[in-house]
Amino acid sequence: MTIQSTTGGAAAETAAPWALSLTDVSVTYPNGTRALKNVSVHIEPGEIVSIVGLSGSGKSTLIRTINGLVPVTSGWVTAGGHDVTRARGRALRELRGHVGMIFQGFNLADRVSVLDNVLVGRFAHTPTIRTVLGLNRAADRELALRALDSVGMLEKVWTRAGALSGGQKQRVAIARALSQEPSVMLADEPVASLDPPTAHAVMNDLARTSSERGLTVLINIHLMDLARQYTQRMIGLRDGELVYDGPAAEATDADFEQIYGRPIQGRDRLGSV
Amino acid sequence: MVVALCAFTALTCWPAIGGVEIDLAGLVRNWSNGADKIAQLLRPDLTFLPRTVAPMLETLAMAVAGAAFAAIISIPLTLAAARPSNPNPLTRQLVRFCINVNRAVPDLVFATVLVAMVGVGTLPGFLTLFLFDLGVVVKLVSEAVDSADHPYLEAGTAAGGTQAQINRATVLPQSWPLFANQWLYSLELNVRISAILGIVGAGGIGRLLDERRGFFAYDDVSVIILEILVVVVVIEVISNALRRRLR
Ligand SMILES: Nc1ncnc2c1ncn2[C@@H]1O[C@H](COP(=O)(O)OP(=O)(O)OP(=O)(O)O)[C@@H](O)[C@H]1O
Ligand SMILES: [Mg+2]
Image (cartoon, rainbow over all chains, first blue to last red):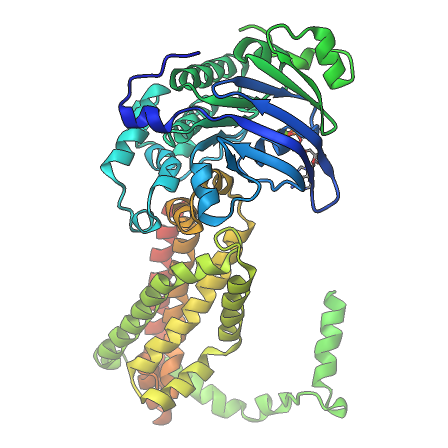
């Protein structure tokens, strides 16, 4: 599909994209909410997939079962052939090290420098004692700087994350995920708190860096035009059930109405810039 | 609310129900005696000032050393006592329990017991302040950490970090202002408390104060009290200025 970038043999090796598969996955939260109901889906290595659905349909829950942030109640989740459902402790942390994640609220440490925020992405590859003593390896810093460079944030390395604009914060968060040299990228509403031009710019960065590295990408998104424009395949969720699975570019308005269970509204589109 | 409080106060003072007896008549009876002392207090003997310098420095040393050691030890204990930095309920509750026990002991009791254990001097004073500060800082900062937002925790977990990595690289730098604020506050408290600690034998200016009071040298006592007042105010001004810069 995409040509692997030429950033060194080791990087290319660790960044080989993973296949993801959910088999009959259900999630019931402790308060009794059934957020996912018997969802089965297989995602090929390197695919860029959007997950659409109304608020509360289970998009965040689905994406969080893949790195084990939300434990499944029943069913199996595998990532790159590893059983996420049964991974614990060190094995789970190592697995998470291969899965980058970005969030709607950026989830940066505001008082911490951009560089140190990006170095969070190296946690799984760094002995705890090194982090605790503040002894970051030069190779890790190098990776962090390269990740920042690829999203155009290199001049801001020493800035406090809290002093950045929303779009800049999300770029730093993307760099944090990229510095993991991940095999999978999960994005939970990555542009929902950004204005339209910034949203497009960040989606561009996300799609470009991911395809450069040949990552498997899962993006939760509620805007149909962004889903069509930036992803290849679309999965629709309604009330925790999988109700659509097909090519994103060809998804019709009728398909969206079926996923949303209501007519298309203005706020379902971002609109052109 | 206020009425209830007044009623409660009045009731606890009522001798018939075994309340505390507050002999207001005594205030009037001993008035002339008291007035004498007050007159003496109003005439501080400033020639006594040089003799107070060494004990005052001792007090300040106790206050600073106690606050500094408590500050260092408070870091790991606070992280262990706060939920975002320690998800394990067992160790978290254990640390919280120890801190609550520590805080339940009045500082003068600590000082008295420690004087009995390690002897008269600045050591029991330092230890008392250290324990007192540790309780204050760990309790207040861990509660502030609990109630703050920590969106970066999820990112650290998602990146495969251990709790120790997440704490060191993100929770701690995010919490420095909370820590620094309480460290400075504990230093302020120390200067005030250490002035009294001397009374039970824990060194510093308090011991001199107790000695002069024993000799009924109220003009000297007056000098000491004024000096404590000045030092407390100076420390407070400095610490307030520092705290404003933290924000
Ligand atoms: N930690 C939780 N505890 C209990 N219920 C939860 C929890 N997280 C989500 N839910 C519930 O599970 C359902 C699915 O939530 P989820 O966050 O996956 O939806 P979503 O599609 O991401 O919605 P949104 O677009 O608003 O982010 C909702 O009904 C939600 O209230
Ligand atoms: Mg969500």
